[in-house]
Length: 627
Image 1 (cartoon, rainbow, N blue to C red):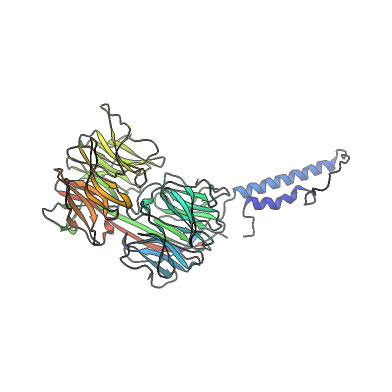
Image 2: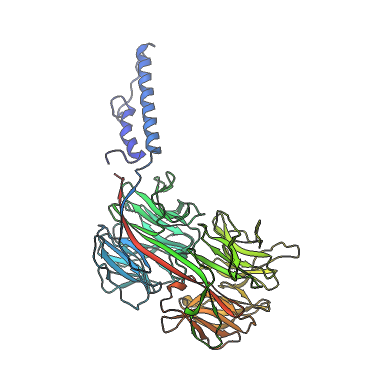
């Protein structure tokens, strides 16, 4: 603590060496020219002294500029929560004695507070009032701001009536953080970051940042760190999504954001250490999600390479007490496998009758069955990074088809079974690729700065539907086709605001989801040749209709995953392609957390879907080595 903390501070002490007396010449005096002494040992001695002083200054400045700040060391760990299921979003109180967190199924999480040193968690939000997420303590420890189904809410730290600060936007997600003086909050919405006074006043735009979330204010008030990209990782719909994101630092007084992490890894949950100020964040740059420390220069740019503080903790979010002596994080894991259920002649049936298709400690995000019913093609993290695999649908050995450094996701076999389309990352951007079904060199289908994902083949194998810029204002369903020589053309818009496009068996229609006003969505059928989309499931609350659907083999019906309108259950529903009232075909358990980020397909006379087993607990550790 006694050493100089920056190069600027060091230079202020070294400036006195610029004159022999340790001072400077007064501005009111005039230098007097004197006769130069004759060359001799005295002159050479003075030059040696000056040279030595200059070398000392240069060495001291170089040392100050290159010396790494003290690295945080994490001490003993303490598990704060033990219940099965999800316990997320830990936030340590400024004094480090309390921790706020949320627990329960996604879309129904409640906000709790408990003492770090022991005691029973106290619920401070009621049941059956939607969800509460990402609490943050005010600097005085008296209030909490958190996100909910209404928007950003403010309430007393130990319970009370919440007050709505910012209504929920159409994008459907808000989180916030306090300024060091407790007078304002910073919150991202869409592609912008805003600052708003807590007790009234104007809201000002701070910066533009694509798909911003998880902002946090530095203790000295100079910087605001935010995440850009993969908002699904923190959101309820796709919580834990595997995709790249980056951490940026924005001057709190206004200015251009500065990227401080890579864009190829998943980087999230920035938090600040106070003395000396440095940034903590979660990253999977070397595989699993761990906590890293990054020193920043006065310009906000990285001063050194990040330092890895943990190994194998699978952290999702991280929080630090105001004095920097305690750190809390949520350790999140999930397994997910493919299950199958016969399509009932008359429903609904209980989905507990489903049979496993895949098994093991892995996470399957998306899959597809080959047209001939022989192969199950799926992505999995069984080798560490999500890659594409295939196995006989009837059971057998699993064969890995991709093995790149970047994740490979959402594979889809072509109708003739010779190719597989999937999406991966190039320079942090999702792009679509097509590879031989037996493995081999992939062909890149899409290019540019737009994100493309979830390719689905047309029945003739000449075209793909793809989703452009999911969960952004420019989201749409596109079609990309290839010429007779096999060259892929540029994507064209099929439906603005559309989502995953599933081709009808006749190849003349595409089933997709269309966003409506107020964050609602509708299930629609779009003619390939042009024309207005036909609504088959009217606009619903976006939390009720899941992003998974499929056609019946004869094209007469559409099946999709959705929640009850008036109850907690989730089911597989059927609606006529000509329109009409949907009816349930199968019910899942009332706790639908296993269906979070579920993938759903229809093949032959069976349903196929993923079921997950998410688990998250809150841990705390002591921080040492900084002083």
